[in-house]
Length: 243
Image 1 (spheres, one colour):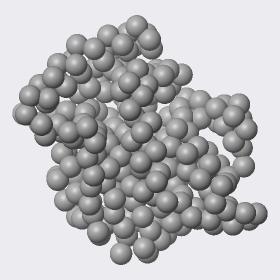
Image 2: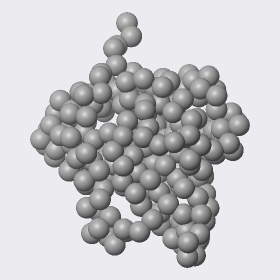
Image 3: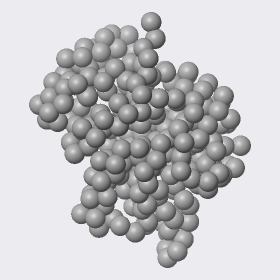
Image 4: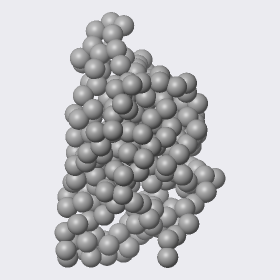
């Protein structure tokens, strides 16, 4: 039986609860490997001087800082570009803004409260759209993909890094056992919130596999859809363009 997707209010409650420990938990749950996946995502994005890039569901700034740093290195003066971070959870945005100030990353970043399914931005206003481990948490995935198409300029790039389905026989059972036994316990011990990390495990299992997600991207009007998998399919990086 297909599980019903949670509503937006529930998801905001989850991320409000875990915001302060979110990045630490990502390190603990993945052994730091998520950093390598995000680095690979930004390399594939290849941000260019003067571009405006939208990072959705990236409130703590983990991906946005990587993009911003590459723009600062590659650009000069007014051609450096801008990263707009959009997240529906204010607590996550507060963490990101604080991290930015603490690390001296202030210019070139804009923090915006907003829903991935109804972005508070005009049509065709960004050169690239990124979302890392956020798409599975929206109530209507297809609506979010249509919004990505809408805000991208023609030729604009979409990159989506998300958990997927393990495709290696045997490893899938080990990963499932690890997810069930370890992740909620880590959530309880480190973030003081077992239930939210139980939800995060369940959200991974509900999410479409990489082939289904690619088909839904094409249905939303995106083209040149392709994907790369990491660690036997634990995660997948999808790339596409707006025609």
